[in-house]
Length: 175
Image 1 (cartoon, rainbow, N blue to C red):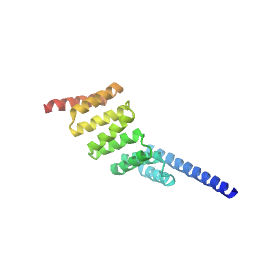
Image 2: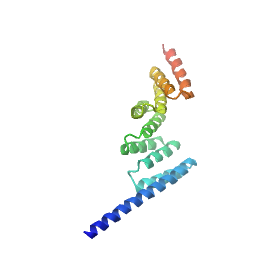
Image 3: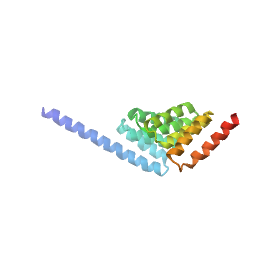
Image 4: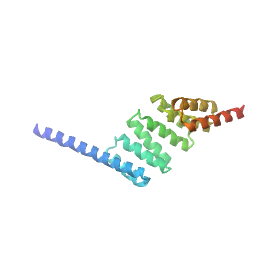
């Protein structure tokens, strides 16, 4: 019985040390990303994930670094993993949508923004981003509605006013 208790204690301590190592690597990666050193940040986030494959923040942070590096497909993959681990991770949904928008998957981007909005109806950035995807898709009426919602949520969001006016002009030109 004593051997089983010792094994459980050692196993528990090992898991705690791996979690601390992963957190430390993630923190180091975050600092590198803040400095704009995305290659090194990606390496550190990868090491953190290697220590703890269930660490959703490391997946998310690596996705951000990939995105900043222009590696949108890799970013989308990592955001997907973060979402699988934490389905209510609204920022991961929103940012995955942004990267889908970058690769011209406007329908996929709209789906992701809609999920982020479902998770937090007051998430102005997701409303705004979805409006941008609607413009890119040529659905100006829906874009106008999303920009208007953004403005209601954040009256100082200048880009929402500008893009709402652009959508209105494009909508009028279609008629």
